[in-house]
Length: 337
Image 1 (cartoon, rainbow, N blue to C red):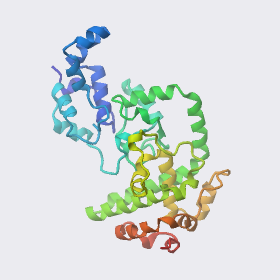
Image 2: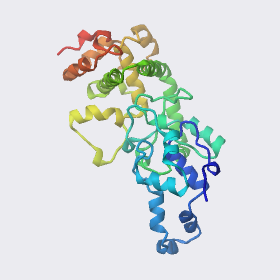
Image 3: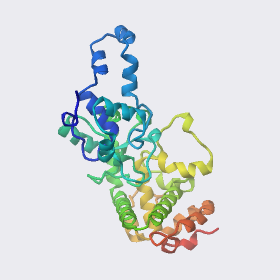
Image 4: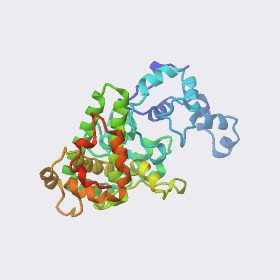
């Protein structure tokens, strides 16, 4: 009989799906153990195959942000765990998240450290937060894996194995990240400052509108008029299947923060910092890579690019609060109707 004390301890900030995978690999349920010693033919005839698939389940389902899924209840029952305990340990922080269909971001250093600590690469909840494209421990921009891995039950293991087979690409990414380090540092400053402002909000409605204001700026700076600002980054969009392809401009406006890489969101935060007046032109010019000719360094140039999106102007006005508002945007008058 399993009990909580016999199971591996959850890793700090570990996502539930990651821990479920580690638990099953360490202490598999009877249905899983019964199949391990069988050849392919005998396994296909085993009466345990169907229960096994139900127990593992989860592929393509978000077990990290939807705790009412039947797969989680089956897991809790198999290991004699209470749903209340699972929620208390793994319930994620509130915030806009990347849907599982576009999940791709991770920190390789965190994975390497977790292997040394617990013997497995782990996947962290914070890597799914749209407004946190940086590792919360190391401060680096999150890397992005190929999207065909997004719905893997053992996502962390798949990603780590994926990285092991592409040393040349990792080296190329490392060189680009070094070149863009100062831009990322400013982007992280903006992300941290946004978080501090939202956390301090006493009124929930004001906090929500503040988040909507920031998300609107994020969406605006990721739309096609601004794409030249991202021309130098290695990965912009997350790959997706045809069922998730969309050409509707309004739909894309809301989806782009979910469909781009952490690298792209990090640069978007830098652009937002300029629009918010948190990054002045001298800081932007000093941070701009020498050969990145198209990256904006002034609010006025960004507003000119955003001119075709003038219909978004009322949204910024609607979500304006004492936290964030149009009165605090640099050169707001340049965003003409």
